[in-house]
Structure formats: C-alpha cells, structure tokens
Image 1 (cartoon, rainbow, N blue to C red):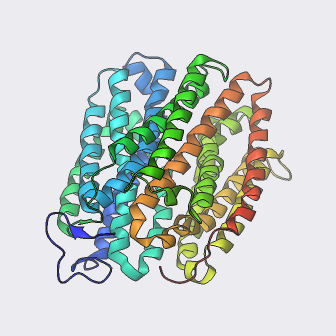
Image 2 (image 1 turned 180 degrees about the vertical axis):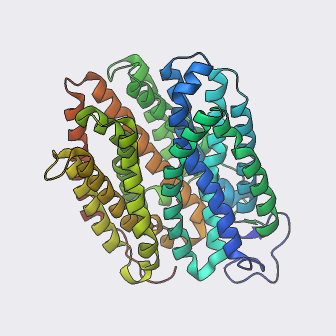
Image 3 (image 1 turned 135 degrees about the vertical axis):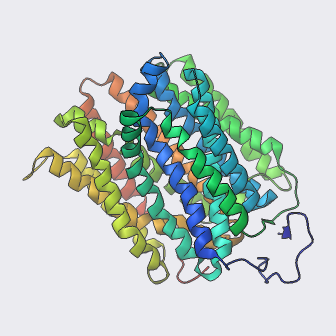
Length: 472
C-alpha cells in the first residue's frame, strides 16, 4: 500500500510507517478537537426526539413525517460511514474531516432555517452525511497522532458518545422550552465554524494511502443496497406497510440484488471500494456479524426502553427517559478503565464478560420487578447493560483494527455501518411488532429476551476472533 502526501512526494522526514513529521506534536489538542465533532454527532442523534411535537406544530405536519427527521439521519449515517472510511484513505483524513465539518455545519444552518418538513428531512440527510464521516476520519487522525498509544486513544472514544446521548435530550428540552426547535440546529453553526478553524490549524497535513481512483461502481452498489434495505424496514417500522406488502418486498428485493452484485464486484475489481478481506476475511467476518447484532441489542433496543417503561409499567415520560441516563452512566464509569486495561486483558476476555453482563441486563428488562419498584428495577437493568457496554465496547472497537492497522478509517466506517444497520433494523422490526401485537408491552419484553439469547450466542464466535495483547 503506497503512502504519499496530498499533492507532494513522500517527505524524507517521514517515519517508516509513513506518518509525516509533525504528527503527535499536539496530539492532546487534536484528540480534544475531533472529540468535539463526535460529541456534536452524538448529541444530534438524540436531541431532535425532544423537539418532534414542536416541529410537527410549527411546520404543520403529521408526527410520522416529523419522525422521519430521525430516520433520515440514521439512514444517511449508515451510508456515510463506510464511504468516508475509504475516502479518508483516498484523499487524506484531514481533508475528509474538514469537508465533513463544513457539510455538517452548513446543513445544520439550513435545517434551522427550513420552512417545510420535506426540506427539513432532506437536509437532515445531508447533515448526517457530514456527521457520519466524522468517526472514520477522526479515528484515522487519532491513530496517526498517538502512534504506539493509538489502541488506548481510540478506545477512549467509547466514552464520548454516551455523554452526547445524555446531553442531547436535555439540550433539546431547553431549546424547545426557552427558544425554538430551530435552536437545536443553529447551535451547531458557531461550534462548527470554530471547529473547522481549530482543526485546520492543529491537525497536520493529510496523508493519502492509495493512488487508485474512487471505485464509483462499488460505492453505487453499496449505497443502493443499504438505502433499499433500510428504507424497506423504515416503512415497516412506521406502520405504513407489512412484511408481505409491495412497499416492503420491492425495496428488500432491490437491496438483495444490489448486495449480490456488490460482492461479485469487490471480488473482481483490482482495487475495490471495500476490500473483500474487510468484509469476510479472517477475523473481520465474525466481528462484522458481532457488530451487527450488538448494534441491534444495545443501540436499537435502547431507543425503545423508555417506550417499554411507559407501556408496561406506566412510568411518566421524564422518568422513562432517565433510564437511558442510568445506562450511559454505567458505561462511562467502566469504559475508561477498560480502555487502559486492554493491553493486559486482550480483546476476548472483556468482550465475553461485557456481552454476558449486557445479556443479564436484557433478561432483567424481560422479568417483572422483584423487591423494588418498576423504576428501580428498570434502572438497575439499564445500568447493567451500560456496565457491560463500557467493558466490551473498547475491546470490540479494537478487535479488528490490529489486524490491519493501516486501514483504521475504513475499518471504523464499516464497524459503524454494521452497528447502525443492526440498530435501524431492530427498531423497525420492534415497532412493527408492537403495532400488530395484542399486548405490545409483553411482546416488547420478549424482544429483550431474544436479544439476551443472541448476545450469549455471540460468545463462542468471540473465540474465533484473533486475540491481541499489547500495542498494535
């Protein structure tokens, strides 16, 4: 794999790994800067949910169309992550990061000025394209900056996302109460401008890791597959179609066909958009499956925990929402320690223990309360899933990176794609089930049990993943 600067020949001062001189000089400032971007994306994943009624009233639309402001964001992120991972290697990580920041900031401004729900939905998709590109490019930047300590630095990203998940609903409530729903988007503009200026100064020049042109056909096939499959399930979850309707079957058929063509394409192309090894090579295939199920069990089911608390136990919305805070606190409490201990524990042990604890938390969500009231019981269950996440996610994030350290951005993008896909499919399937179930609360409790079994079933697969101790 050839390394070079954006426009210049390789520098004679570059180290043997191809990293140019100057990298690591301001690594803590760089880490803080790119962390702000990840925090903004995490906030925007949850902040809109609080403002849906206000958006519905102000733009004179129905709640299902207002809900598409969240769906469009998720769909676009799924597509943006793997694309940004490859483009970071193609055009340089700094270049893609700054472009992502510009797209996210401009789209946020336009979202805040939108005068129709259709415009807002489209712009939320554009905003997510920028937001989805942050994680792969930022991971690559941090990996270059921290060199031998990149395993710990990348693992520390784990604690940023749940903090954003906690702050998002609170900020959304404040803006809606004291200003307008438009403020949840406009607040990104000054932060985004400052972020662009800071990162343009402190992040060293980008490195291109391939001379090959962009695999346009591969991008088109992957995008067609993801969008078709996700749209089908999104309509299913919205209750506008059933599993036997044409509005579900046609998109799924298109998605499957595009997926088959995509796999054939990457096998034959000399330099495919996503190398086949990263999809189903040794260690990669198993981890992609693990990330998909993990995304459904943890990211997807988290979105419906407050609904479950309201439906089954009659908790008020505010109390139900704080259950996610309990989970996030549990995750933050453990993630930093787990990140620092990775070189001693390796990746398998924390993944096995963490997935087991997550499964236990899901089982408690399924079981009726004992000894304490519904809120205390659900808070303990949510907190356990958070502890399991904090223990497992740093190892899960790094499990495949050590197999191909020169492709951090591409691997990070794929990991995000599989997790978000699992999340969207789980939410859509669960909400579709609730719409047809005789007792939605009981049906949802059984979903928790099914995913608890799936998390335990992943444990034998973890033993197939190459274990790694020390630096990579």
